[in-house]
Length: 105
Image 1: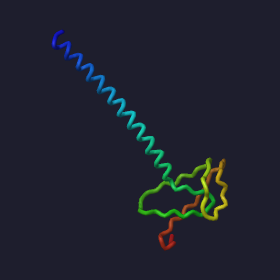
Image 2: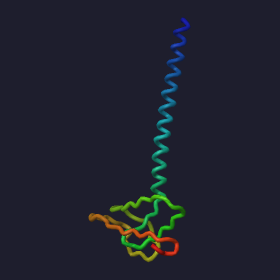
Image 3: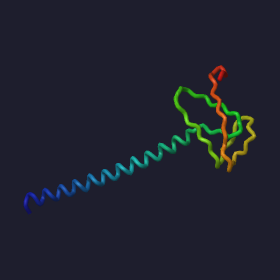
Image 4: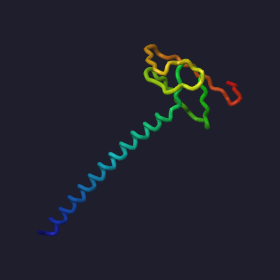
């Protein structure tokens, strides 16, 4: 066996190892990205529509308001009489009012 034939064999093995490592790394990154999304959704502050809800923010920044039209809530704290199961056909029209710590708009 010549030197160039042995060199080609090692290059083929090295190439295969690099491909496998790349595929495993890509799979790990894909899995981690889906877990991050699930963690973010789990950290949402959920409140039923039609109830006055207070959310305290620890820092300033940009926030996004999502309105769920179908789903369910776990136990609802406070005096809100909203049904924990909901399925809205009509578009929700939420009203958002931001107040400072003193209650001033």
